[in-house]
Amino acid sequence: MSKCLIVTGASAGIGAATARMAPAKGYTDVVVHYGRDRDGAEAVAADVRAAGAQAHVIGADVSDMDAVTTMFAEIAGLAPAPLYLVNNAGIVAPKGGIADLTPDRVRKVFEVNVFGALEVCRRAVMQMRAWGKGGGIVNISSAAARLGAPGEYTDYAASKGAIDTLTTGMAMELAPEGIRVNALRPGPIETEIHAKGGQPDRLKGMSDKIPLGRAGTPEEIAAGALWLLSEEASYVTNGFLDVSGGR
Image (cartoon, rainbow, N blue to C red; front, side):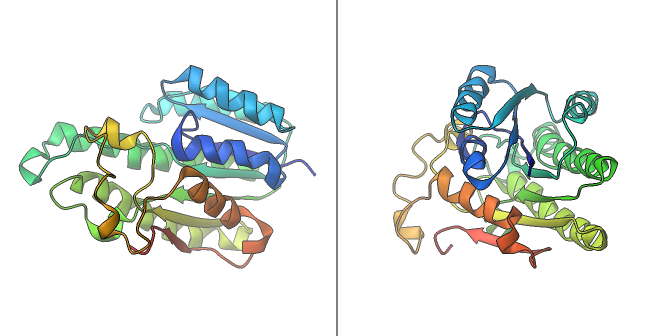
């Protein structure tokens, strides 16, 4: 049976690992979304195809609502199938305390992490309904939604708190339609996002703050997200899976 998976922010890190793992989990079509890094997305797509699935590379700035509309118009042209979403695209601003959380900085973080994520969810649900074949959603949140990221990324943490609330609202609304919605909250993970936040060495020295004594890998997050979408998790909705090494 054909199944289609959309992975936003799939050119690197958690999104790339998720897209690469998808064919082994039965997905026949994988939408490899990227914001800026087309070369990274094409490399991921090549791996998806080598694993036996169709890969569809689509670029869109998720903070641009028109771009999201265009992306889903392209997705609508695929063969109808159960549609699944790993809503992963997100950004972090440079490390800063409360005095650094200017309106412009916070607005940029929320435009991608909240407004963009919500619009991607909305469009995905509309497409699921149009195809009439159901599906599921996993929103990538963060352990920061619980921990607050004080003195570092409180605006990022707040945006992920909003994602947790969005997950609960959508899960309760869509459950009668058989569409399950869950969130996965990663802890410290070995991805490029730390460098983008101005702290390329952030994970060094954090092991004493993580009960399991190490950072996680993108593949560990991908495995959790794909499990939440699988039939093995068929009774799980409005769930929050912490993959955070015990933090």
